[in-house]
Length: 55
Image (spheres, rainbow, N blue to C red):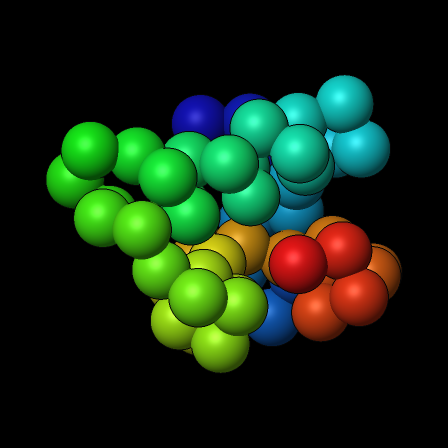
């Protein structure tokens, strides 16, 4: 499936990181989560070096 992974998490390229944050925070299925919940949702499946700082 041509996905780059780090310790079982999909690596998200810089060009997609803000979109992923928006989707985890605001999407209709996610609700409107705070920082901690948004971070937890993203960390469950995804990785990028400054994920915690970016959220």
